[in-house]
Image 1 (cartoon, one colour):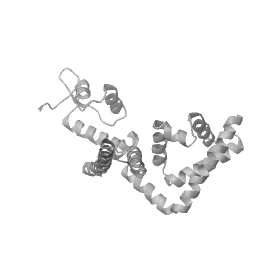
Image 2 (cartoon, one colour):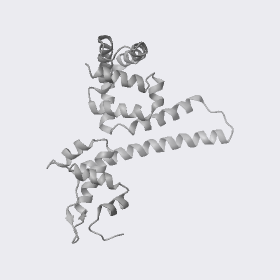
Image 3 (spheres, helix red, strand yellow):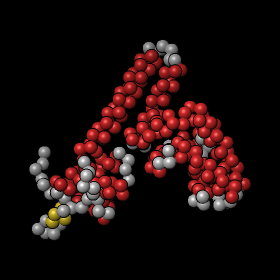
Image 4 (cartoon, helix red, strand yellow):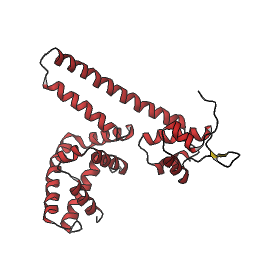
Length: 244
């Protein structure tokens, strides 16, 4: 364990695994900057700077964009302990899900190894747990709770109606794209309005939830393709939305 009290940017990057470029960027936007200078003029990070950097990384892991992080930690009422508490809750939930998945996989492994029949429901449950774990990587606990409340507010019948409408809407947008209809045409803009309405039903109008969902689909193209949404269609409807 080191008793070092000050770190150059390269030293800090090496110890934390962050890149020098990232640290320079945080410095440039005023998130965290080296607050001391060496006798030779090198800028040095202090223990206090490291504490602030840890807070930034915790908030970033919770899904907050850098602009909001800067505003939050600059607030005199900011409570670092509360951030750690929320992060611990999220980790506890991830651990619980991982333990659940491990238990199910152990049962499946035993059945297969001993050449016993495996019920299809067991496969379905394992797939469901893994997909839920994937989803939780993109949404914060607060966003997941908001999504849950939004679903409760809509009710099962309304959710079913929206789920049934999505394929029809996607097919209509696809047809206009295939015909070469400009995204700013009235018919496509009307489709984009309805698209946005359905997204808002899901997100409750929360732009951060929408952004997280877009990132999830962007990084998991299989989900998007299963829905009939590929890169070309997504770009097309996004451009149409800019004309709403």
